[in-house]
View 1 (spheres, rainbow, N blue to C red):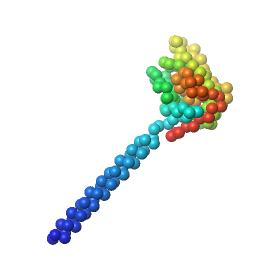
View 2 (spheres, rainbow, N blue to C red):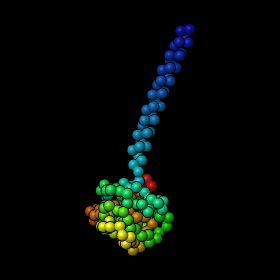
View 3 (spheres, rainbow, N blue to C red):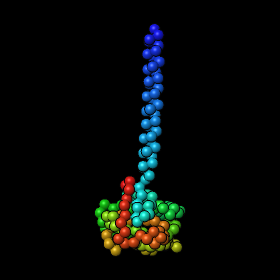
View 4 (cartoon, rainbow, N blue to C red):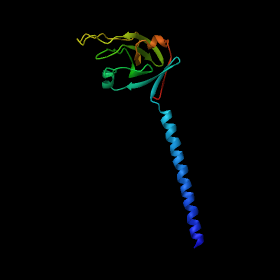
Length: 160
């Protein structure tokens, strides 16, 4: 009988130890995944911008129009299936932005300090690239100048 009790106690210790090891592994895996999944970001020169990605037509039409302001290191990235001359407007925008047109991994056109409309009278200016683009990055006005983002700058998109 003592052998049976000893066997049960040893197995309980083994199971508890195994449970603790599994719990620690789960914690480490969760921590690693949460720290490596920081969302999508765009790196240009030595600058990194956390971005919200607009992929659907609805997301592209709304863009940043429902946004009151934007932190300096954030933006919105618009993705298109193929390169083209995509037009952008400032409908219902509340703050000025820089519009950075990208083809592949290279900046092709930059519209700086695109101002929100003073009134919504339907006569909104359209902003277009001088070359085809397949991506567009919108950031706060002045960011392109501040971080020396120019035509020809190479970008790197991570976690897309």
